[in-house]
Image 1 (cartoon, one colour):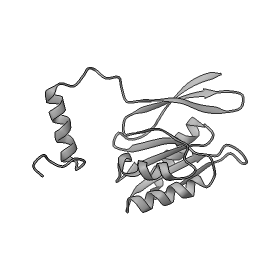
Image 2 (tube, rainbow, N blue to C red):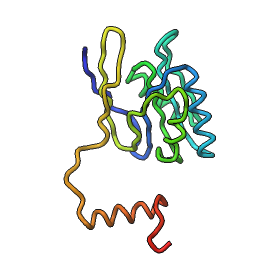
Image 3 (tube, rainbow, N blue to C red):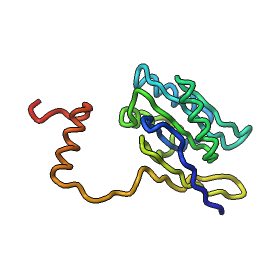
Image 4 (tube, helix red, strand yellow):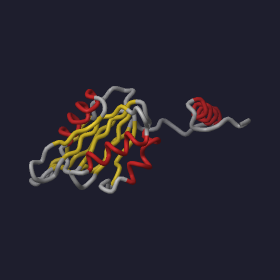
Length: 164
């Protein structure tokens, strides 16, 4: 087996989800889940077909995001992997629904960080072995860092303030 590291190519402000599914219907079902969960969502989806014509199947509501997803999926080249790039939404908003899509088997990561996918290549094909998401921690948060984290979550609307 040969091991490769595939860097996910994306702008810094774009979130992405890397997962694995099991059927060509995945593309339509994930598309429907996205538009029903976040009205006006901009996304691009690419799915690596593992048999038959073995194409990268695509869908989405944003042409640039669709192209970005297909380029990254092709670079990973792992059967039944899907790459989903998001604008106007955070993974936390769609992960519960995405996990309910019948074809979805697993989620490897959901992040806006720069990421690398560790891929094993065999004579049969490629497999995702893991994901490097962001960088190594530099230490443990102190009281001030805790306060800043809590303020940030309230600022972006994911927690209510203590007085509410």
